[in-house]
Image (cartoon, rainbow, N blue to C red; front, side):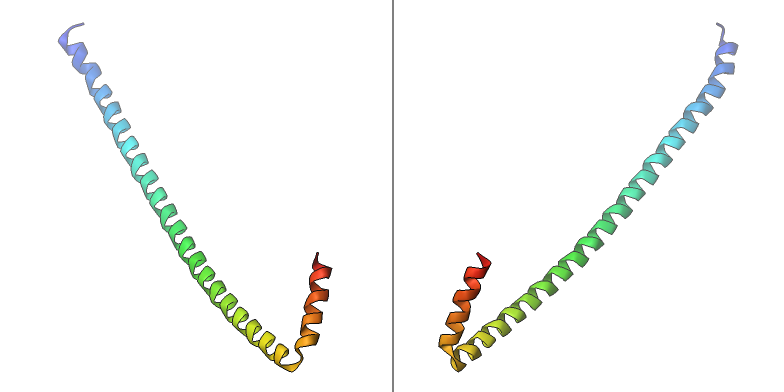
Length: 94
């Protein structure tokens, strides 16, 4: 193989290698962009879920406070009847 044959083959080979490098770089860039978008979407979803959980905890605290107040009111009205109700409701749950 002489020098002219080498240069005649090296031009198309170089073009092919350059095209492959560009395609690979574009693929990596697009893949990184897709993963970044997915990560941002997951982060937004996690933040929404965190806010929902905080709201649920606040509601539960409010319900527990109201429940304690209602029990307090019921026991002040008729503590014997409330105790009887609790005993019968506990045995029904078991």
